[in-house]
Amino acid sequence: MPRGLLRALFAAAVVVLAVLGGVACSPSEPPRAPVPPRAPPPPASGAAGGGATATGPQPVLAVKIDNVPDARPPVGIAAADLVYVEPVEGGFSRLLTIFAGDLPPLVGPVRSARETDAELLPQFGHPTLAYSGAAPELLPRIDAAPLTDASDSHQPAAYSRDGARPVPHNLFLHPAELPPGADWPAQNRPVVGPTPAGGTPTDHYEVRYPSATVAFHWSPEQQRWQVSMDGDPYAAVDTGRLGTSTVVVQRVRERESAIRDTKGNPSPIAETVGSGPVEVLRDGRAFEGTWSRPAPDAAAAYTGPSGEPLPVGPGQVWIVLAP
Image 1 (cartoon, rainbow, N blue to C red):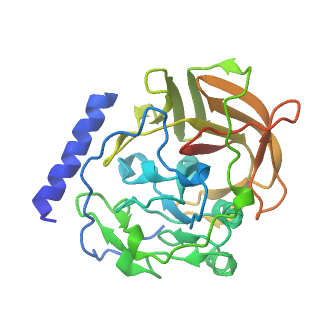
Image 2: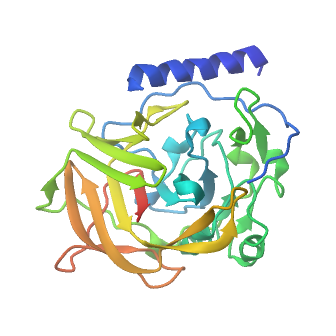
């Protein structure tokens, strides 16, 4: 794509955001990442991804997404079936997106993996993991994990850089160029069902990290939770404002890793095996309960006060690993 056209597309995305309301990388640049044309917004139900709540074969692709302000707006993540929000060093957040249905032509910006990912990913069987590297101390664990390593160093032809964005927030993935992951184990797919009775009326929910905030605002008109990051609407270049039918706020313990970033900040590890409090947001209501996950190769189960399942709605599901 011509350089001028790509810059024009990116500028258009910035205008869209304004209307709405507003770790190492190589210095060499592969071909520029073509940004896809703007697609219609997701359906009013909030359904975007389909694999999490669909049946049949579902090969899993996991992609690490940069989520600091300089990395926004993202591309392609409305097609994800699950979106995990994880704490990372410096008090910021990063996304782990799980695709098990249709793949978008472009996803990003892609960033590096963390120890939290190593504990989350075994539940998906043998997924393909796309990321931009990891701390040297973590690489042996990734090599030993039940996954296909599809980092930019292993699959360079599947990645390109957008010269209109600052390094290192400009690495993008072309998913069709990657080998498919194994099928998502049926027993680990989310429990889908109607909204339970009860709950607490809630039109806004916010999770704060030391240097970042993720918030969800219930839109009765669109029948979905609209996503905000750091007080601003979170919108993708290709689909506009992001939203979801279901938000799972999973309260987890955090511990410091021995791994440090270049500024000396410890990398936090969110402990996702065990149990703890959970709140499931659906249809403008919050349902309190407990999450439980016995092992890395099992999915988390969400239950209410009496032990009844707390199901998710159809479409994309956001899971926030909250302190």
